[in-house]
Length: 220
Ligand code: SAM
Image (cartoon, rainbow, N blue to C red; front, side, top):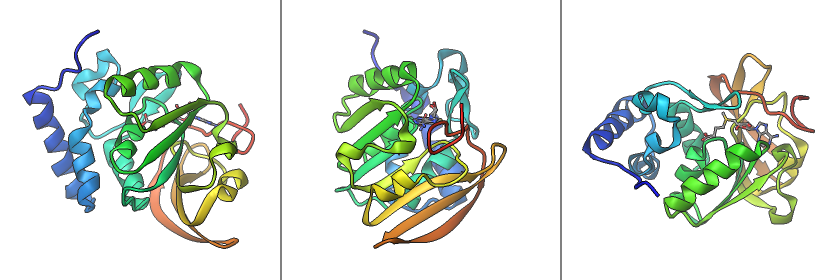
């Protein structure tokens, strides 16, 4: 098995990403910034895109899917306000990068991906990295993970027409959910906080994500 190479040049590129793209644009949570220093993003990108691993844009990871722009991953993570003890549901495992960041910041990550090939690749990589607090599932994440609900936090890393009712139902009291909501071409990054049966809503600006495909998302 090849080593998880993470030499000086990668560390420098990562530090520059944290300073310029994250801190420079207003990411303030010190734990979030440290997680981005600690997780080698270049391990999550295809080998022919390695040179772009720390650049300021999303990258294709195959099957028409992407690893999101570093700033967007950081913003969504910061919006979750993680303190360390939370159980977090992620919909859209993709490359596994967001799951690895979350794994550094909470107790357990439950991540669901509809494409088995991507989930298996992410599972193998996170295993090799020694991140033992991530559980994987292949299926339709718009329906959540009912057997493990409620979740303190829910993060949806694909864009849907609305927040799925199943996900709202699986959010714990006082819990927070973040998700891109809009049409296929552009979305608003929405955060919800649950208080009983009502949900306080905030917007964190525009974004563009691949489609959330499933029973409570877009049709295939
Ligand atoms: N979080 C990922 C990362 O760090 O690389 C990026 C995710 S990518 C922008 C969106 C992912 O959501 C894709 O891998 C896609 O297959 C997945 N997806 C779309 N609809 C889904 C659904 N209903 N359930 C689970 N995964 C879904």
